Length: 404
Image (cartoon, rainbow, N blue to C red):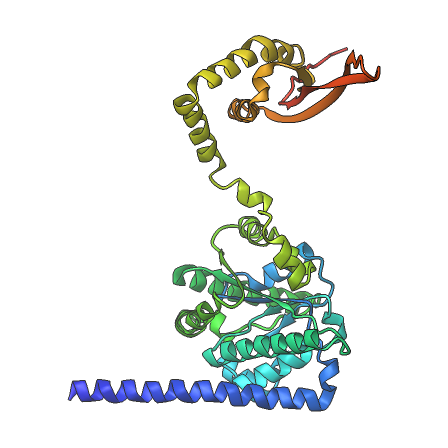
């Protein structure tokens, strides 16, 4: 009996999932047709970049929205999905910790994104939250991609830029989420009480789920079991930023900065970005750079021991005395014509040795044309080329305090 019940539940679940997928297509097609009818296809211009901000209840979406806007220099007011839903039915559903209808949410949101004030970029708080909404977002991206491809094939049409979608997920565990929700609720109650007593300030609406522990847990579990699982399916589609939202506001903001530090993909069109992507990102070069440096130095000693020893001896006897005389300024230039540098590996060794010792070293190879002799046949001056090597070495200088 248990097996038959389990099978029936699984079958019902499969039918629900199939229906959900079909509903997503129906919902999206209906909304898109309405948008085309209302705005005309040529006017369906979505923001250049869109940050889809999501996260567990109490993870700090409201707090970090303004930070992301400032970091990316966005001027459009943030779009908070919950504020778009002001219908009585939507309010009743939210008070019960339930989701509002996918079609209503998606339709309101897409129209909001077409507002000209959002053209340079927008931050959205609270979408997508359901599997259907995730599918609608995928369908939107694919539709915009198709329009971009069509416009690129027809030089007579206006270019259609493909927006860059960034999905940011702020995550905290259940215990922290419940604690923050209840703390928020108590904080709002105290604020409202002071407003009533003093007559100063404005009352703040408090979520019913912020006042009861079980309701707060239910809200978190809804996020974890429905929203979070659905969001993970977007990892392979958009830029996906998973942010650990535990800790102070400043700590979380530092993590966001680390995730969003390199943003060329937002300023450049896709072809330009693809062409430049062969050049490594500076911050990526730092990853494991110490380990690679150590390996190179060990390989010098192992496979090129004689050249490595000669190079180190040259640095010790010729370079270091000059560097010591510039210990206050923290920078010096050293010129050398030593024949050891005719081997390019010796130059690499110098840079790596100084790097391991905490110096910043760069080398410039200079070629000088020097008169050598006169050709007896035509009396022309014959010249030879001489190479010289100019090393720029920087380090932390000494700060000398002078009291008067």
